[in-house]
Every structure is written in C-alpha cells, then in structure tokens.
Amino acid sequence: MAGAIIENMSTKKLVIVGVILLLFQAFSFMVGGLIAPSPTTAIHYLATKCVDAVKTHHQGSKWFMPWGPDECSKLRDFDEAMAKRIEANNIVFAVHIPLPNREMSPWFQFMLVILQFDIAFRIQNQIEDGALVTVDVGLAYRDDTLSEWIEMAHSIEHRKLSCNFTTTKTLENEGRYYDCDLLPFMEVGSVAHKYYLLNIRLPVNERKKVNIGIGEIKDIRLVSIHQNGGFTKVWFAMKTFLTPSILIIMIWYWKRITQMTRPPVLLEKIIFALGISMTFINIPVEWFSVGFDWTWMLLFGDIRQGIFYAMLLSFWIVFCGEHLMDQTERNRFSVYWKQVGPIVFGSFCLFIFDMSERGVQLKNPFYSIWASDVGTELAMAFIVVAGICACLYFLFLCFMVFQVFRNVSGKRLSLPAMTKARRLHYEGLIFRFKFLMLVTLACAAMTVIFFIISQVNEGHWHWGGYTVQVNSAFFTGIYGMWNLYVFALLFLYAPSHKRYGDEQSSSDQGGNSGEDIQLTTTITHVDGPTEIYKMTGKEAQE
Image (cartoon, helix red, strand yellow):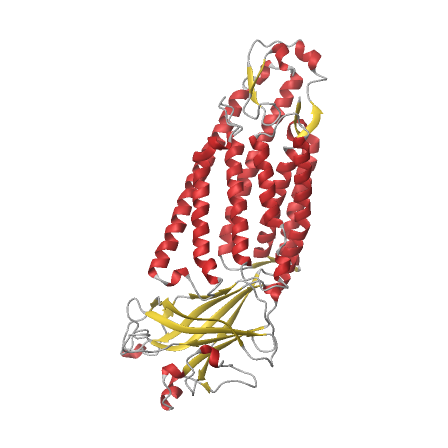
C-alpha cells in the first residue's frame, strides 16, 4: 500500500529532515535577533503652547508650527497666558512629527500616538470623578518644508481621565502633579508623508460644562510609536523568501494528492487549506504600501492573521480527531462542528472588535473604542467572549490529545503478535504520530510565549560582542516557526511512492497471530482516514 511520507520514511531520513528544519528555525531567530533592529521606536514630544491671536477656531484655516521659520507665537506656561490675559480657547498645543531635521518614511508602516496630560493639583481646581476631557484636534501633512500644510483629519474627541494623587490633598502639596494614565490618541495605518503636524485645542465652555473639573493642565505630552525601517526591510525580505517556498511545496503536495486513485480525504484537504492560509499571510503585499498611501494595511494584516490562526486551530482539532482510532466515522468536516464552532464564534467576535476600532480609524484616526464607557464595555465583552472560547478550545484540545495517546498506547499492546518487520513499522508510525502531536503542542506554547513577550516592554540581551534584539528575534522566529510547521506538514503528509509490504508478504503470510490488530491509517486507504484495518494473518498484506 502507498502510505504517507511520514509512514514510509526511514528514521535516519526523518532525523535529517528534522535537523534541517531546526537549523532554519534557528536561522529565523538569528535574523531577528542579530540582523534586524528592534521592531518599533517610541519618540517623546512635549507640545508647544501657541497663541491663536485671531481666534481661528477651524483647524483648516491656520496651522501652528512649534518651530522653524513659520513658528507660532509661543507661551512658556499658563502663568504667562494669565498675565497677558490670553484665554484658554486661544491656546493651541502644537506638535511636529518628527523632531527637527528628521523625516518620516513609508518604511515606518504605521504611526501610533499616545496622549498624557501633566495636571497639577490645586485645592480650588481638583479633578472631578469621571472627568472628561474634550479635545479639538487636527492633523496635517506635507512632503517638503516649503509647502503648505494639507489637512488630513479633524475631529472633536473625548477622553476620560484616570488620575491618582499619591499624597495628601493639602495646601502644602499644591503644585504637585497627578499620576495620570496614558490615553490612546491616534493611529494611522501608513506613513506616506515626510512631515506631520498636530494642533490640539482644549475648548472651555462653562455653560455646557466643557473641560470643567479636569484640574489645572500644565502640559500635553505625546509618545509617537512607529515600526523601524530596518525591521520592516528584514520582515519584507522574509515574506518574499517564504512565499515561493510554501507555494512550491503546496503545489507539489496537491499534485501528489491528485495522482492518487481516490478522492482527497479530510485531513489532506485541511492540510492544503492550511497551506493556502499560510500563503495568504506570506504574500508580501506590504511592498506596495511603500509606494501607496494604503491606510487599511493594518486592518488587512489583522484579517490575514485571523484567517490563518482560525485555520490552524481547526487543523489541530481535525488532526487529533483523525487519530483517535475509536472506530467512529470522521471523514467529514461536519462531524467537528461542535469543536470548530467556538473557533468560528471567537474569531467573529475578534473581527467585530477589530472593525469597531481600526475599521472606523480608516476615516477618523483619532477614534478609540476605549474612549467611552459604552465602547469600553462592548470591547471588553468581545474580548472576554473570545477568551472564553479560547479556554474551552484549549481544554478540549488537551482532552483530545490525551485520548489519542491513550488509544495509541492501547494499540501497542497488540503489536507483539505481529511479525518483526511489521511491528517495527507500526511502532515507528505510532512514535511519529506522537512526536508530531508533541511538536504541535510545543508550537502552541511558543505562540503563547510570543504573545506574552510582545505585550511587555522591549528589551535586548548582550551576548559577547553582539546585541540580541529579543522582540525582533521572537517576531521573526515565531513567524518562521509557523512556516516551517506548515512546510513539514505538507511534506510529511504527502503520499509516498513507496509501497510497504511487498517485500515482506512472504514472511507475513507465515505469521498468524490469531488476534485482530486494529490501527488507523490516516491517509492511505481509499475510504478515508477513519477506516479501521483488521490485520490477521494473511489479511495483513494489502
């Protein structure tokens, strides 16, 4: 019978393949750790206080530059504004991105801006509970220092203050600053222009209680975060190299499947679908973002990742189910609807959450779903539901893996009754199934580690005379790991040209154990992976 490559490959060749894959895995980590810089850069800005003498409340009528030949009329602090009788509505906070004598680049891919208020404590002007700051903000761009600023976005946003005063609220502590949380402010999905300008106003209206009870704001600080151009180039290079690699092995895999005299079975189909989703995430369409102002690339990248991870989670369920060896017909995707259902529902919740924020940001980069209580509760609801689905999925996956190991161990008790050659063949087969499932769990664990590390502060290790960028290494390493994982599946589960048993038929005919041996062959039988083979004496040769 013609089995899969994993069933017919010798242990020596399998070890060689494993070592080669491990070398590529180590190389993918080294590319990020030793070649690429850190994934992102954070730059701090202190907003310049400008005076709007003619009260141009519409942002498009005039833009205020914090420095340069067209710099605005500045204020050192609000005490100077009070001395000059300048009202709060006539003060504009200006921030130029980037810093002087620098330029932004399309290689930066995105720009995320975080807002923080410096608020001083005053007995007569304290921050009220649930205080809401109203911000009138405009964003403009230009590509040279002589051009006029072009408005890119304008919006009136609200941000809820969350501040703590760590000392006692007494007269002696007046002037000390509150400890305020960082606030999401702006996210742009592409950096297509060289210079950006933010003009921020804090309009005050006592009758409508706008910006009343927010304390004494002294300064506005911004933190701009963008992807490093060097890391972007390394990332694009990896995608460009891996795309044809997965595409070629996928075409080779499906060509072997179509050469079989039987139709493809479920496990073969879902492995091929996993290869398609990996190719979809690999295609380096980001190259076009360097020359085009495609602000939707962040959202598109999230959708591609979501499709791949949903397919990967579905594959793990089907993979374990097709190896349970419990004589249940499973060669249909509908059999797994109870297990795949939480994956689909959780993915849908995360998709709605992503569209609720990044989808809206395509029109208004200042929008944040976390800015309002309703939006926060809605976002948390989607995240919690998705988290519950993930926990249920993980528990069920662990249970299925336990069942597979238990059933395989039970089948091993019947192996001594077989001939030596066939027993060694099936012992190796069971070992490889166990090994591949352990590798699957290891990849899942590495994904969790990758997620956790990507959420903490960036760091680097010093190794001899080299500096290892930890975050970059994990980004490229995990990305390379999933490509190698899919590559290995497409290679090892492709049909083999070998026909095991032809040379052993004479010896097998003489060995009659009188005992039924039931083993599941995943993709070799004409009726699919759930067919149970009964091998007794002469029936053992196919």
